[in-house]
Image 1 (tube, rainbow, N blue to C red):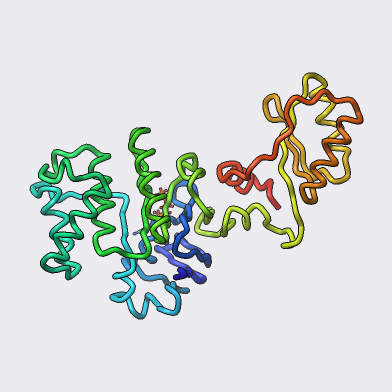
Image 2: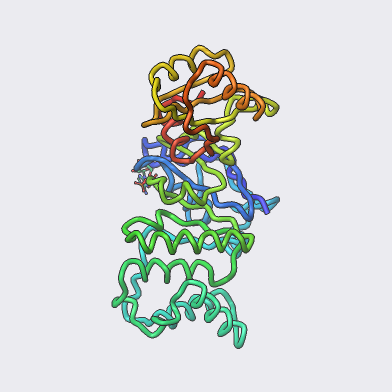
Length: 313
Ligand SMILES: Nc1ncnc2c1ncn2[C@@H]1O[C@H](COP(=O)(O)OP(=O)(O)OP(=O)(O)O)[C@@H](O)[C@H]1O
């Protein structure tokens, strides 16, 4: 299933919270929604979750227009808002059972579903605890469980990692990976990229309501380049002459960018892997004493920094 946001615009008074925003992703993908405070992430997510309507544009789940058919759309969405459950005098189990009923699950099916979700989100041990007695990380898991109770193909999560300790962040990442392996789409916002860089298949990067980049990591990193244009990112460390290596690299016609990164010189080489081999051979001919020569994966955090600095054309 594909999820499309098309030319979305939402204005509050004079503020254009979202401005002509378009992007798509699909089931099985984890897409990071990234932008600074006030960029329009929550506004977009609320529209996608049918909790708000745009001034212009719309959203489609495959061919389903969610503005026209919000009831149908709601069955396909699990929404985890950035605020946590507040029904204080309910146990975890009763809370989840309540939502399962609200989604129309009955009898054995409901009991089975609630148990399954409690197990998946690691809530079994605390299902009889009162919500008010839970830590932030536990509440976060309850909120995730609630969003999953009707088994939606799309999970929308607004800043789920905010305020979590490192262990809870790792657990959350594992849960998200498991969900995407189950074939769900996860659309997750954050202004901290570190926790998403490892697991995201793609990203939507926005600023002041407008789109900067959207697509899979590969598509974003290839922005502005033809599909048949290949690039290799390499990192090189020499025993000495590091500064000279950097200059040499800048002079090579097929090296498109070079920078010094700690003990490495990192470069973007135009061409396929053969070109990277040729670069290494050339450096050896020039008698550089090379300790390391490796390919570097594009990392989402670096991409985000490049995009927001305007370094990626
Ligand atoms: N209900 C509202 N009334 C008036 N202005 C609003 C409303 N909701 C959002 N805005 C404004 O729209 C802009 C985008 O807000 P939004 O909450 O979508 O950003 P965000 O990217 O989620 O930010 P954060 O990372 O801080 O959560 C902001 O300027 C905000 O003040």
